[in-house]
Image 1 (cartoon, rainbow, N blue to C red):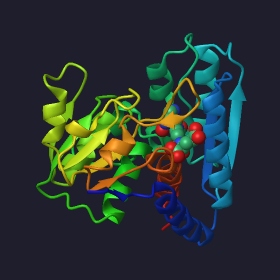
Image 2 (cartoon, rainbow, N blue to C red):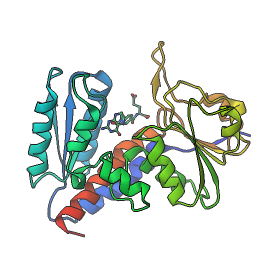
Image 3 (cartoon, rainbow, N blue to C red):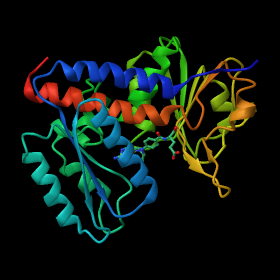
Length: 282
Ligand SMILES: Nc1nc2c(c(=O)[nH]1)N[C@@H](CN(C=O)c1ccc(C(=O)N[C@@H](CCC(=O)O)C(=O)O)cc1)CN2
């Protein structure tokens, strides 16, 4: 079997175009502010791509770049200003943050109504309660890919490999909300390959390059690779050994060009949702 390739880059372009059409009908430009602290080079690329995509789709977008030695209090003060600014609909604090700043303090400081990352405990709790409001961009992007690919969800066995707050847990909640039977597997799970082989839908979000091998995958399964890992030779690889997995899977997302571009498109979608909810426009 050779897997169907799920082209996240194309799906993201379609979503961004639809969002741009909706934004063009609004009497205002939804405001997005991305806060970057320090000089992490990958963050620099992601933040630039977010700003470019947002501006192209008609959003009022800006990046606030703070120095690497910014204190937690200074970052919280910046976030408080953005919370109070009526022109700002969405706030995102790019991760990772420098070590002197507690990530959870930064996340909790964002007004939940402007939390377009969906990381605030209130938004995480609403999702866990089955009442999603602003949901994390990467899992939201995965749900779009599954929908566009026509993957049946009701009753499907889904295994999410990874239990992070920003991908694994919200991913599991969204799949559960779509009536999948969901298992969250992780580094302490007994016999990980056997657990993954039970999956009709396998979402790998574990952050370990090419960890998922051919014999972890049930023939015909849908494999979604959330991992983005830079190998020492500079090559970008996912959490799934792509070439061998594609020989077994029914459908698979590549890296790059799979889930990554959906993360940015869904940031725009969350910002539009937040703007409409805050300003009461339809
Ligand atoms: N506040 C947040 N920080 C981080 C998030 C997040 O969702 N919110 N996610 C990641 C980084 N990220 C967005 O911020 C992100 C990562 C990768 C991509 C992407 O499009 N990747 C491309 C490859 C890009 C490359 O060549 O390096 C792909 O997969 O095709 C978009 C967004 C951590 N931080």
